[in-house]
Image (cartoon, rainbow, N blue to C red):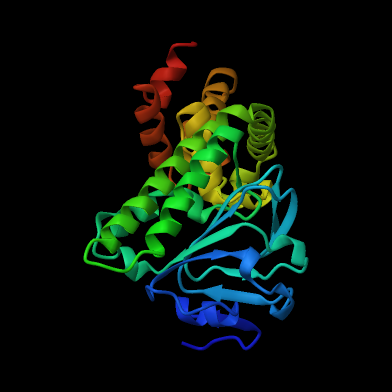
Length: 304
């Protein structure tokens, strides 16, 4: 595989520890780094980095912005942030950002466990850097205890149970993070309602200005790019608040537009389908029937 020379690749936990000036880890596939023990002066700032393993950052006291990738983690009073393998990020330019703890573990560490197959279900590993998890004081205490337990296990001589215990602790950490993200979606309603209102406006403008006829239907990718949100974060947030993922939400708005056109205009079903971005009217009719239990013509006849 060809690699760009401006990206610094870190392929093993041992390499990472050497570059941080820390001792070789007891286990080659997992390490917990306390940045109080790292000499940040030796770290190159603002460099593109690609790591081959998972990273969970826990900043219990830090307040401010930390730059990663093309955006920032904006910690209010500490929190958690997640990176999956092969993501390209920027090392922080501000040495004050090197605080807290970071858990690194290689995919091979969990490969032979159920978590190896399930980890993709933890969507926050695919969130943008600006979508960090903010923790309440009680939540922070729970996460602190989990990191302490992981640290204690890593400081214990490795035996036949070490990996089982550590994988269980990682899974528990991820499950708590899932719970806290769901809480965050609910407690940050003002912010999230603004996002939903913006999304509604975008979709209404898209359909009302004839973009569907010119460009096809709105895509999740394009919507997320305009909202500057990751696809997974928007879908998880909508699911938490509305019970619908992004694609289902778009379809619901589309169906409401279709109902409006069917009940208030003389456009044919095919013309409505094309205006809403469908290449084939049959696809529109099938979706409409699935969502309403009526065909477009049956719906229209109810208004005649």
